[in-house]
Length: 266
Length: 281
Image 1: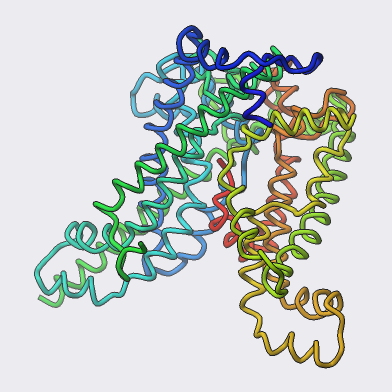
Image 2: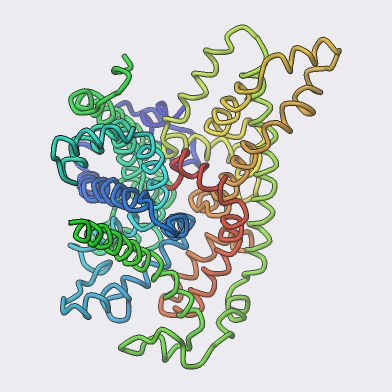
């Protein structure tokens, strides 16, 4: 149904008019916002995925230390994860407020000039990426802790016998042993990043100067503000194809660095 | 030598604690900050440098939430949608999962794979056809598009999760019940369901979290402001009164209370469910 609509001009009121590949042609060759929204989504993805994976891995390693009270710290680290969607966006609009927000206040303490964050074309995307790290870090941490606990301690011991320090332990044992989990969540994080919508809708409405006009936000505007359902359907299909292509590519590349203990599941 | 290594261990422990506390502070400060802002008067919110503990406690921010927007109606609408969605999801996804896990019928595994494949489809691809279908049914601007789908399967992920759980129940239990002449319905309701309680709670919590906070669904299907949900109402208020931070924070906190409560009561299920589903885009 969606595929058929993508070949039509359709404003919901009248029945769909078949127009062939016209929507796709206009998207790919004429619509400047299409390119802008793809670029924005791409930049956001590149900022967010390493932040989310790296950040939650650090949290997990820290929260996996055998010290007293660690359960308490795990709970605290997880707590922000229960906040999502509109509430998350509202809190961070306030945090990112250039004059009275906490982020710039804290930067001021250490003598750094704070950027305008959501009101600046350069900092709006990093801001939203930072917010999503706060929002998902704890949840991903749990996954990584479970994986960390599955690493046999004999591996670490053998590195120590060879005289390796903490970096050798991290790089030669932790990373390879966690690589299947890191891989899976990179794939998922990229898919999630492609879908970013609510935060941008609530916080910036795509601005300033279209710097947070993400793909799904533009799609939403086309479908439900302009009622160009056919056009929006074509956009949805292009996103689906891009997502599938990127995921397949990751699986291809993944074979080179992902280490499966039980042999690769072919 | 011994003394030295003792110091080293001590130093390591101190460093770990230091890092643990520093990161905990960074993660938790936005929440404390929010709580503090929700109790501040408007002048104090704009004071530089900011104060942590409000000089004057302004409880009226919380009552203003109810005066400035039809918050009570939003709360009622959201609760109505959420409760029905949870009931529908738990009931229908467990029924479907039971059939996939415990019954034998032709094409079962193929259809199961097909159901799983629907998880891959991004919401935005099916959003428009769904909208058109609900429009043709004259369901727009009602709660039906938000509630009825939960009763018709309850989502691929929930089906998957419950099927995996049902598969861990020993076959002999079902066989014995069948020999005793119990109907399938009876086995499902009286044997499988009680045993699946932990998984059912996980599904219920995930559904709660999703529905309570869902923004896109209500945004598309509801046009009448009186029908708004909390998420929608809050977003609307942000658009209109950007600078009334005290009230905004108070409203956000009220909306968060059920989530926080469920988190503390069902921590184990909650964390497991969240980690598995990767919910939260």
